[in-house]
Image (cartoon, rainbow, N blue to C red; front, side, top):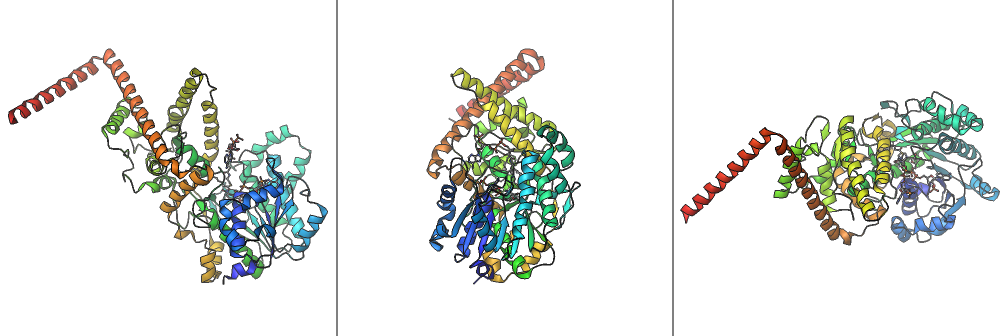
Length: 564
Ligand SMILES: CCCCCCCCCCCCCCCCCCCCCC(=O)SCCNC(=O)CCNC(=O)[C@H](O)C(C)(C)COP(=O)(O)OP(=O)(O)OC[C@H]1O[C@@H](n2cnc3c(N)ncnc32)[C@H](O)[C@@H]1OP(=O)(O)O
Ligand SMILES: NC(=O)C1=CN([C@@H]2O[C@H](COP(=O)(O)OP(=O)(O)OC[C@H]3O[C@@H](n4cnc5c(N)ncnc54)[C@H](OP(=O)(O)O)[C@@H]3O)[C@@H](O)[C@H]2O)C=CC1
């Protein structure tokens, strides 16, 4: 029997952010491996017209919890949803509920946060800093509390290049910021925000750093640990591969690429794509909960759960891995038809989509062709254009792609919508997508080094059985397999597309490919016609080609007549 699984048996566990991506996988694993746990308290707010109970039922009825229902049929009775809004000062928890939480809780996993990069400072501080302080205050009044696990992010100190498993001080004390936000009005806050966040890329990472400082300052005698995951991605193995349920991080980009909206991205191809599967993060969280409660380390330990230093994958490879089965040549179109050749010639001469002509142009990688291989195998339904992907770290090239591959098609499509009496929407959608992509750019153009001594130490402390059941050894991850499952998971669980629709989607891709070739050929012919009309040299080249072809055909005809 696993020591960690046994540890959670009979325990009352409080989870914040249980309705989020990480929180759901955490609950699932807890119920599956420790079905004899006493209760999981979750702090939930009503949302999107759903009551607390409806939200809980929706989670438990999802595919993610299918295995749990087999192992723990009374799972509904073991979840206790408590009304709470972390935006409010005392979380708006009723007296009775608060009493129960304070007297019964054994372990806390604090996952709730605002993860939006564009949130207001006021809201982000309230949720990521003040709420953390409030929860710590509650924790200090819990006589049975054994461990408090705070989920931060590996990017909370992304203004540094090398990040150790320590809590770094912030230039301004969190308490001062909390106090000043109470009396400053929103206009002033907006004005001072850039000065406050300095070299942090956004309010999210900045407030997560403040949150860690609060944990350090308010830890009192509690057993606390901080976990810092990097970019949390779809499940690797558990409960099944590829599960994902929100459009954050890579997920939205995969959708936008698979649907043919996003065809180029400003990314440094060799920068580390520090994606970490969500089940790996959850396994570490549970191991840390056990270690913190049982071994009671003297100080607050920070654990990095990242992939870069153990099993690195870069953005190029991330786009690339899925494709090794197909062409194997990153610079070639997977089709080798005449149309394909024509396409290349058209691109070469017109200079339209430079990457086809100069695939290894400095700073430009053609990794996207490899991503295409997955999308060709598992295409998304009703794509806007054929999926394509270009990585470029050059700002000029990126602007070029935005104009040619994103804005121009959107404008053309909107004209078409207008002409057919419909409301134009593509330009708006594209602007929104490009804004989102621009917010992620900071993270895909840099690499960080995270030390993982504590995480490795913990791994060595686990029994072989625990290492198996709570595996967070990312060295065993096969990126090729993982990314394929990831894309499949996005299709199945996020887009809710049926696998039966694949043949139809493939047909549509073929149609789009033909339109693409037709369009490029037409462009080539128009450009060539214009060139011939204006340049004597072009005319000479044209006559030379025509006479050469004529001679070749005559020779071919003559030799075949002779044979007869
Ligand atoms: C071409 C080449 C491609 C090749 C492909 C190759 C492979 C892949 C390469 C990948 C490279 C990627 C790298 C990622 C790096 C990430 C780094 C993270 C580092 C930090 C990690 C962390 O430590 S922490 C978590 C990270 N934190 C986020 O990652 C939030 C960010 N993001 C936002 O901060 C907001 O997103 C932002 C942006 C403000 C926009 O905001 P926005 O308002 O414009 O858009 P939203 O995203 O909010 O939503 C838009 C509409 O989608 C609706 N929707 C939401 N979920 C839905 C659902 N499940 N199903 C249906 N619909 C859903 C929603 O309801 C809206 O619909 P409506 O408009 O109708 O309401
Ligand atoms: N996803 C990632 O890539 C990474 C995430 N992390 C960290 O992991 C943690 C979990 O992230 P993730 O699951 O992805 O985020 P999600 O956005 O999926 O979940 C956030 C959770 O916080 C809850 N929450 C937000 N505001 C409130 C509120 N006012 N009152 C009560 N609950 C609230 C949400 O509830 P509701 O459903 O009601 O909105 C939801 O359950 C966060 O601390 C994040 O910083 C760290 C690194 C990477």
